[in-house]
Image (tube, rainbow, N blue to C red):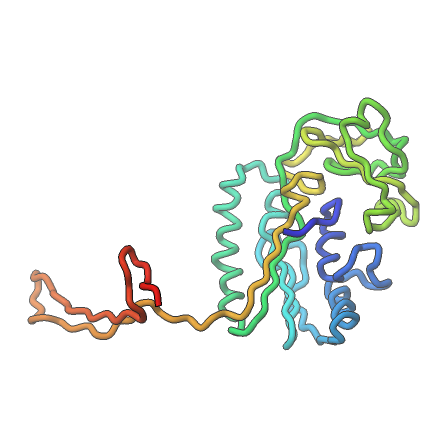
Length: 280
């Protein structure tokens, strides 16, 4: 597993995967994933792929939302649950059956089937989700540049929270987090901390509606902080365990009578009991 960038927001974490570096080190200029990926490939591998941008849209609720294609590399982002879990009050098991399983069976399988046998595949995620807690910590306007810098699972602030709320939260010095040290709401205005509510708590702005989703990301749960990573090498040539040698009808076929077939099956290796192959 890998460690997610905190707070686990798409603008930071997924783009950091494309850029191959922390958000504070993104190259100046474009922040599109395709441009960040091109810059990293040029800097690290000396590649200058001419990507065909098949899809580049985060407005889709599920399926492939990003796909860049080149002869050397394909970059694909599947949206499994992010948009589906926001504003969704259903149970996770139902969401999985109705959304995630279908994406795996349809979109993911269609991509995997078309990959060449010698493809090297890297799989990872940008963040997870966790159920939203119920206990509330009010974040005053006096500690932030703008109230919109307060989200349910994190807040970018200029000061730490005062007791007793300080004990219900965890604060990080923004200088060591590798993310922009400015307010996301007020351009070029510095901040000093990113604060997260401890387990069982969530933040509330001093003004505006308080209507949290049932599930959210951006906090400190293990489901959000630890992201899966896997590398798959070239596929081995498939070898069928059993092959159908012949099918022969025995006797003549008559209506209403049982039809008997003789089927010859050839094993590709000697078989032991319970379906296990014999040792060499």
